[in-house]
Image (cartoon, rainbow, N blue to C red; front, side, top):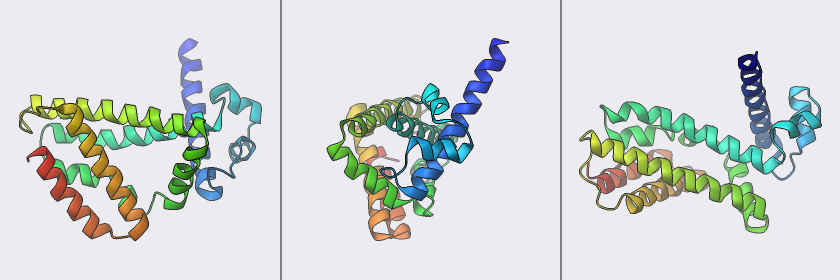
Length: 192
């Protein structure tokens, strides 16, 4: 019985996150409400609050799921393949326009005035850095990259390259040029 409850909770959380993503994309983060998200999946607003007490916590979960999806594509790079190309390939949702730049910019701007959103971004950045350091150590231990003398700094540089490329694509729409520049920069930083 407990396994069924756990599976149900995981499915419910996944449905809520999917609905929230759709609503944020359609209405924007600032205009979207918990009621909008509840209507999207046909549940009460109270049911949402059982899983996510705030809209910001939903944002944190959306970011975590996006990160996990990206990192799954990196697992294969631990054994073979062009590391820089593989990392750049994981950003195809941004290069293809699947990620709406207007929503991303709205959330980033809102973080300046909203401590809860800023906290969500801080959580996301810390988790990104932790996961990137782990990934670099795994690449190093498998001989895929040379020894990384300062994994914290290299992890931050790679993350800045990814974030900067995302912003460049969102602002300028220069996907091919941005992708080539990202791959070249990653090869330089990772010495591959």
